[in-house]
Structure formats: C-alpha cells, structure tokens
Image 1 (cartoon, rainbow, N blue to C red):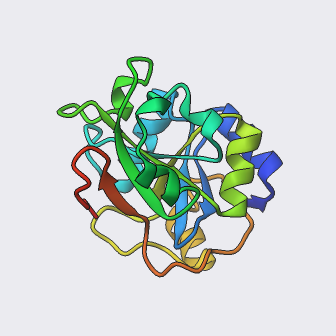
Image 2 (cartoon, rainbow, N blue to C red):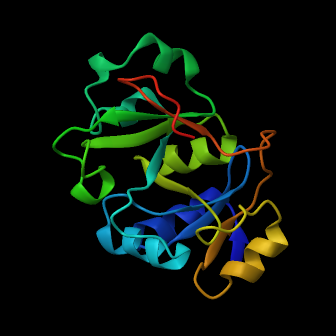
Length: 182
C-alpha cells in the first residue's frame, strides 16, 4: 500500500481504484461514484449489499449541481455545511441509479470541512464516495496501522493525513422529514 498525497490519490481514483483517506472521525474508503465497478468493489470489500447506496462527500456548492436541485435545500442544510452532517436529499435523474436509495430516490451528501477531503474533491473535480473504513458490522478504523493491516491487499493507496476531532461518524438526517437516521 502506498501512502502519500492527494495528487497521487486522484490518479488512482481516475483509474477506477479504491483509496483510503482520513475524515473528520475515522478513516474512509472512497472511489468515483460514477464508476459502478468501483462502487461494487467497495460493497464487496465491506461485505455490504450492493443495493445499499453509499454516501457522497463534496467540497463545495458547485459539486451539488449534478446531484440535487440546489434551490430545494433548506436553511438547516446550508447552516450545517461544511460540517459533520450528511443529508438525504431527493436526487436528480442524472445521478446513477446505484447511488440512489431505490425506495426514496434520495442520495446522501455531506459537504466536508476536513482539509484532506476538501482537497480530494477539489482536485478530483467531483464528489467522492465516502464510507467508513471497516467491514460491515465491525468497528470503524481510526488507526492507520490497523487500516493498512485490514486493507493491504485490496486498497493500493492511503492518503496521508490526520483524522479530525469528531469521535463518531457523521450524523445522517432526512431533509424532508428532518428525521435523524444515524
């Protein structure tokens, strides 16, 4: 596993590879949301149903344009971003079917304030899959050595950086109902 900077990580993303990276609370796994094969690799790696969509992380309002109707976003959404809240929002038709909840048509989005995540999204020029680095049902990984040990054969690149100051992964809220999901 190579450990390095954001520039090199984007090269891996562009080739359809999975990467690891630090987030606000835990290490994350990421890939290009529009690359179905890469998204399926993360599902398989985590032991998670491919029918369960992943959240996406963005770095700016500009990256929302292809995902949701920006004019529909509530004040609560805008006040929480950038930050540690993921919102479930009705997706545009242009969002790949594998990124939407099949029942609701919603997509999970978080505008990050973590410098590594922001740099990744800015250099990649689009959203990134963001899921905790763990096997489904197991604890999220906060230790880089445990990340390497767990994923050394499947993940070729880990972005160097520090975790943020949050103890737990982002909260998830449905924008329409304002119901907290996690």
